[in-house]
Amino acid sequence: MMVRSGNPAVRLATLTSAALLLLLGAGGAGWPQSEPRTLGLQEQGPKAAPPPPSTPAPAPEENPGLINEMGKLFDKLPSILPPIKSPSETMNDLSRLAKPSTMVSGRVACPASSNGAPDCKLAADQLCRSKGYPEGKSLNADSAEKCSAKVLIPGRQRKPDDCRTDTFVTSALCQN
Image 1 (cartoon, rainbow, N blue to C red):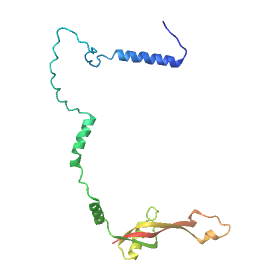
Image 2 (image 1 turned 60 degrees about the vertical axis):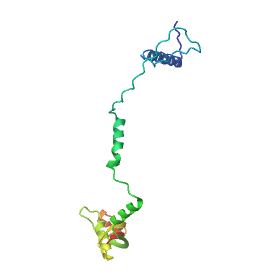
Image 3 (image 1 turned 180 degrees about the vertical axis):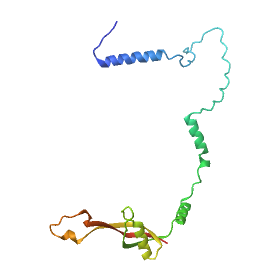
């Protein structure tokens, strides 16, 4: 008997059930089953011999998969990595690497480099030399627009080259 339904949910459930039955039916061998239970009744007659003791399973072969390879890597990891230092040893190493430095303030113009951009490294060095240090790095810079007096003439059109932006180093980190 064939039942037709216009409901899509019923059709989907029917197709799903049929697919599951086909998959389960074609599954092949199932799990081994234990002996049937007799609910306390025992058969009379000759008993069957117990099955021979099974031999222990051979050791599993090495599996060359991703998880196995990652396990090998973790086994080798302690020999690859350097020993971990204590916090005090790390601080001692850092203080040995750090050069003594001092922050200075002032105002030195950054000269234009060959590409037209301000070169503030030269200005930081000049600021540090003025304070008695050999070299420095710019920490803070300031810019200002400098215009010619022509800009102040009433009614005159401003031209692109009337003003320029000057950059100044105002603080630098000087190294001994």
